[in-house]
Each structure stands twice: as structure tokens, then as C-alpha cells.
Image 1: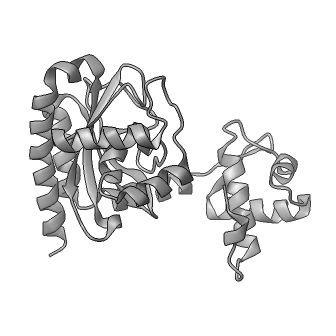
Image 2: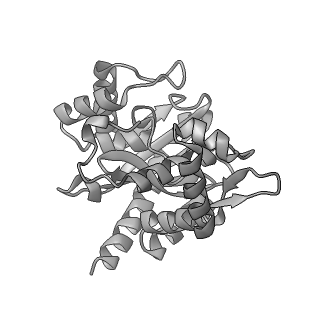
Length: 261
């Protein structure tokens, strides 16, 4: 949701409208007509027609034979570029894939992007339940994932309070922590454990563990590593999971450091 109070004085309306059109088309996999787009974006049909023609020319939308528009392949190209930029150097991706292969568990990297907790890289493992939400760019539910907890644990208590107040504590399951008090206690337990955990708080029957890869004064340069696995396996394998995560975290940290020199 855009904040109208934060609208810049030099906002280029045509660009803003084109993005609204693209978002509307993206939310309609069956396609939309120009009139439907205009209605959803609260634009005139004439303005919408010009915007759609431009987006189609650039490859961001495609006109089908029935006259409806769907998202174009240029959007996929931009997403691939985003994923590559988020992941970092190739050695980081290799370390994630190796960890996923050796353990069978899906591994994730996360960091702050624009001040918000986001998943930045994923390597799927065959023994982990499939979590369709946890893809690069996912920026919700920081309070319910171990990845989010590990990043929020690097903030001060006041910073965390402001973060949770702004983004909320949606109950993904009946086990989700929904108060600052319980969340702070959970983080403290994770600090003592040397690994942040969640058991069924994001998805029932699924557990996630996370450790810090690289601390930094700049919050946007802090990186965490997480893995997901069936909750019953976490109950019996927590020490092994922590050891594997810490080993992979060291490899990822070395890869990031080498890329910066």
C-alpha cells in the first residue's frame, strides 16, 4: 500500500500509472481488457490504452487474440536479474545448493532490503516441505520465520518494536507469536541457543532455523542463513541442524567477503 503522505513532489504521473497498470495485469492471470484495466486503475480508457500500448511495445505485457492483456516475458527477465542481485556472488549460490543437497533441507538467505526483512536466495531441498511463499523477494511474516527472527534480533528492542508495529504480527498459524512480549522472550531463547527457531509458527508442521552470517553496522549488509524442515525432524535433530547451518554460514560469509575485495 502506497503512503500518500510520502508521495514525492516530482512524481512522474505517467510512470506511476504505467506501474499501476502492470500491477493490475499481474494480479489477473486470465488477462484483462483495456476497459477492465482502466476501471481497476481508476484511469480513463484513452489513457489506459496509451499506457498498455507502450507496455506491450516494451514487452512488459502481451496482447492475446481475445483482446486481453497478460504479463509479458520482460517481467520475468527483471525478476531473474533481481534474484541474481539479491543472491550475491556465484559462490554463495553454490554454498546454498551444496547445503541443500547434503542435508536434503531447503536453505534460504535473508537480509534487510529497504529496511524490511526479505528472502534474498533459495536452494530447494527434497526433504523439506515446499513453501511456495518463501521465494526471493518475499518480505512478510518476519515475526513468524526463523530467518526474520535472526535479522530482527540484530536490532535494538526499540527498533524491533517499531518494526513489528509497522508491519504487524499476523497469525499465520495458531502457534504464531502475536505480541511483542512473547516475541522478545522467544528471541532471548534463540540467543541462548545460538540459533533462532520457529516450530509451526509460519506453516503448520514445518520448522525453520536460522543463524547470522555477517553482522554489520549497516543493517542492510547483515545477512542470515536459514533452513526449513519437517517440525518432527527439528525436535530430534536441532544440534545437527545448528552445526550444519553454522558451517554453511562460514562458507557464505567467506564468499561474500572475497567478493568485496
